Image (cartoon, rainbow, N blue to C red):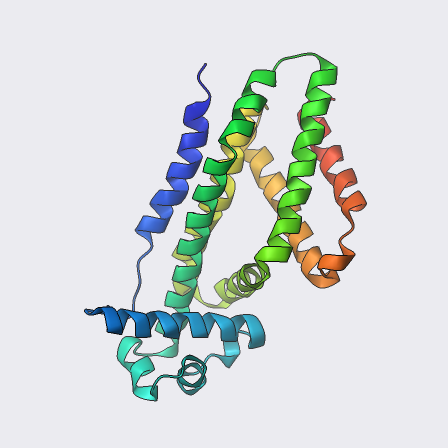
Length: 237
């Protein structure tokens, strides 16, 4: 079987999600207007990451973006639209990042596909490699994408009280699950969808703990124990 479609599907799904994100605010018709609108969205996200969603107010965003107050109310009729479009941009950028990620590890996926069904020692070596990749991914997220991780936490909390974000939350969940689901299909596990949900939950918890502990205090040994325990079970080791 040619395993490449699994990888291509993961990247393609992420790309399709990015393209499908819809914004509620007023669209910009000129380059200068789009730059101002983008500055407002970026400033809103900085406020959310720094002070939380409840700190988002037109006046605070205008000050953060260094634009007139009238600019925020021109593009976004109310705070709900501003928050929704800020998280829409978060989902769009997350989808783009995941598409790049799955494209980047194409070579690794081909190695995993070829090693499927081999002897126990080879499968154990392969699984240990996956464990280290997962740990490296968490490290990279905390070191390079801390703001995105904090935005994700704010997004998850806001979805609980803002039903307008539900569609975006569903799209974001598809981004997280789909690539890992195809990854488990390549490994040949019995329940790739369920396995993807479990591994995603484990990684999300590790990212949350890493935010609490800080980059310099990551417990890689603890992460390794948890990931090995789960992935060894999946691989029948």
